[in-house]
Image (cartoon, rainbow, N blue to C red; front, top):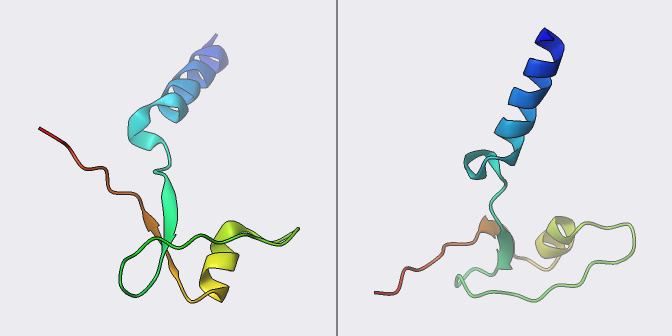
Length: 64
């Protein structure tokens, strides 16, 4: 029973938005978004760095 409770708590924490990974995108030195395509077997983060960009979190703007 304790194991089941620990598994349920673990799933709850993983599914929580506070622990979710934030979406990221590739930006250049001027903070403009870059479109990169990764080769097979290469991650998008590695393709971004190879293109001279940085992998950063997406900042959501709040419109009023």
